[in-house]
Image: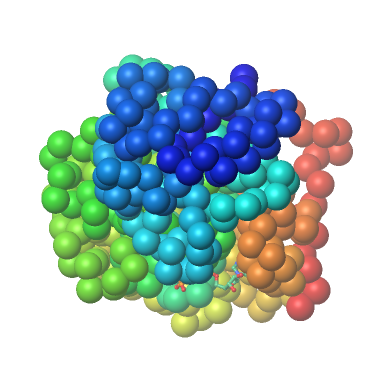
Length: 404
Ligand SMILES: Nc1ncnc2c1ncn2[C@@H]1O[C@H](COP(=O)(O)OP(=O)(O)OP(=O)(O)O)[C@@H](O)[C@H]1O
Ligand SMILES: [Mg+2]
């Protein structure tokens, strides 16, 4: 399906240049050029086929940024790309703040234009899905409830975020609609792991928690190119307190009605928001490294949840991370210390592969067979991935632990 673009500019030279370039892009169709903000807004509101607006910042009479805000409010699936003289970080961040999806210079190369249109068209397509015509939208879950998996770290740095991100990517790859929620409200770093920039967060849903519509969600969520929709933690840690237990319950309830899988990264420090996620989750998982202090921390955490009436220890799952045969503590010993049996799947150490994936901003490419196998098995064990029909003859390939 071609990408439908509307151009908004009163500048004749820019109009001609964009027309000429768009004519060269086979996948892109120019719907028209509007030379003032009033006509442009009218066309966008009434022509539902518009995917992208290329908007000259100098369009009048309404200032460009106000117009972007109006377009985002009326038609949240339309991706606005601001065409600007200047391309600094300040210009970009101001444009993103009012709802644009990007900024383009006034004389882009054909490659630049093509790449930008491709990226934002994909965003627009997913946004249309979310708003009601695609698989991520609420109605076609048809009253079914999505599966909530909450992950918490027994201590900081035990791999909770890594696993949350990988499970979300894996579920999306398997064709499931998935929302990844960063409920590590003070120190959440899902955005870094997914190499994404987005200003809206779960805290922005608090004030409207009782009336979250598709459009409100669409405004706050980030749609990652690999599939998962992402609800970030607030950038300002002090806003963690805004996410009360009842707000978290309402927000997760709405997500549950719209997604098949909801993965919640709860971090290692409990807040009202994260405790609520633990309480309502179908599976609550503590990530634990195989060392005594961490095992004891996991035990303390699960006992705390029991005392707070959040969850019974027998209803808590433990996943051992960075587990290899070289460790002194093996799963059966860990089980004795914990007083509960860890999950069958253990996650091998994959230091270099993970470091590379994070540093390259490519979470989807973790070049470590053992780690990838573990993520698949964990996804199956937690019910976020369909269980593979049959193992190859001779049983599953052993997860190869990376030498440390
Ligand atoms: N299986 C693993 N093998 C090796 N390194 C790992 C593994 N899992 C995670 N790491 C690394 O450990 C560090 C911490 O991981 P991660 O951020 O996922 O932990 P966390 O529990 O979310 O920490 P935080 O408490 O900061 O939220 C990262 O550098 C990550 O790449
Ligand atoms: Mg984390």
